Length: 337
Image (cartoon, rainbow, N blue to C red; front, side, top):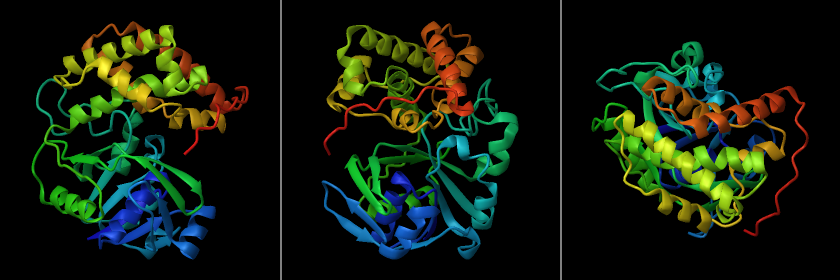
């Protein structure tokens, strides 16, 4: 199986290294210091499951690769619309695109029956730009349960989790999902094919929608948010409203809010990726995680007052990050590996 990793950052490089270890024909697309390191030394993975090094092909030019069987997107969702020049050379007639993103994907209503079938969400697919870049027919959904970070260019620390749940938007059992799942499993990862992948999306979203914006706004770790009575109550309310929106869309995740909060607290002094972005002056990944759920609340006539309030504050802060007027963020205490 020929697989291109578009966005060979922390998750993309980790997946690429595992797939290469499992025997897949892997090609990484990266740039800058990361590309130089990948070419010179390969990918070094530091993991509690065992360290290893892989040497897949790496390039900045996807034209060197040509059409592949699968493109694994390691980009954040806000970069999808602009990825067309990099993606187009990789696409053959049957190339699938595995979108490993947080939040609500652009394909969410593709393959569904009912009143919202085929609907486009403006927050995740503004003006149809993402659908034009990545046609929904090519999409395989992916929910990532692995945590990784870049220690230095070419060196990835795997912190926890090896599960990458995948699924067709219409819930079908497809040959392309089976083939990709087998390649991931051969590389030592878990890759279940879920006929109801939207339940996984909402389970993960319960955490992302709560802790990502709150950690950035409060400059606090997940454990700090959970230990502080008022913010724990706020997180609980945000999760409850999120589940209400999901329920009105016909999705009912089988996980309790208290269990989700307890799991978050057990992660300890973990800084979310959104907090990392803010510390570096980068915009937050907000549209697909929070603003999209507010759009879905409008669509389903769900009140969701707390989600709306947090979204308003976070959106203003994000605009200031984008235009450069936000004050520099104070770094949270470093967490021992």
